[in-house]
Length: 275
Ligand SMILES: NC(=O)c1ccc[n+]([C@@H]2O[C@H](COP(=O)([O-])OP(=O)(O)OC[C@H]3O[C@@H](n4cnc5c(N)ncnc54)[C@H](OP(=O)(O)O)[C@@H]3O)[C@@H](O)[C@H]2O)c1
Image 1 (cartoon, rainbow, N blue to C red):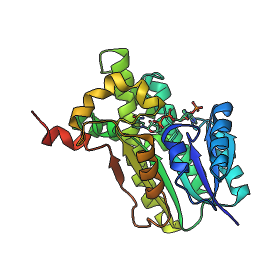
Image 2: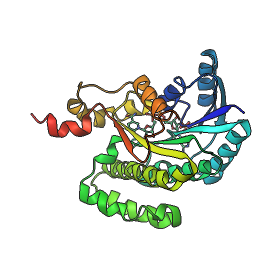
Image 3: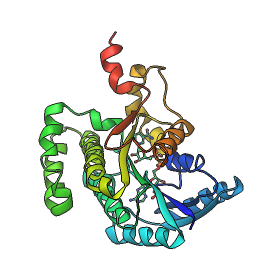
Image 4: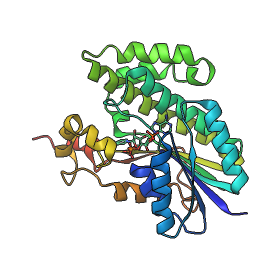
């Protein structure tokens, strides 16, 4: 049976770049909502010599994720899942961001863990925004993270209460995005310990500002971070693709239950680059 790599949000950006670093003997499934985008991305991979398929899936819909997991299993051994699907503050309101980024991660991790075996990996893409909110706020918000698995309506209500403390609509979406990504880091850790005994390794990876379509859309607000990076620049999609692909490789077997902060140093730069 061939090994299968599933990449949600694989039709563009970092997900597609990560695919390009996969071993060619693996089957790659690119997933997302826009079929034409997926088909173009699959053709790019085929031209590079990969075996690749497109499969539409909305990660904020559990049934859609379940079907993706079943499809992946029908093609071989599901070895690597890269959950790169996500939306940013300029794309949607707070509720939508929480549904896609946070609840989508719950669906992907839960549904794929059911079809994965020992020696497999789930990598959830988070964001350095996970570290951006004041500590007391994230600590309070985190108290209701477990509700995401048991009572989605209450989870959303409580997270939106915190997000809506911000002033403008953009800031509210920004808070919701940051909370959704802080949740992703927390949930990947939770899953690492829940699935570890089954031999499924789970981790998250948090990019900084990266020059993908999404990064360009957020560049106006996000560029405030650039002076705090070590090299004072945005990250490139291939750099992040490589970081994601290697962190999600099963040979990187001891990297579990942790968030890999891949942000050019911008989170730590606030302490070291104060002028
Ligand atoms: N670029 C940055 O600066 C940055 C920084 C930190 C974190 N991130 C995170 O990195 C990940 C990848 O983003 P990117 O920068 O590579 O941007 P991107 O090119 O916009 O990729 C995001 C992908 O997610 C897909 N997607 C969105 N909503 C979805 C849904 N409900 N179900 C399935 N797929 C969905 C999109 O395709 P469809 O619209 O066709 O579904 C798109 O292909 C995201 O999780 C993002 O939050 C990005």
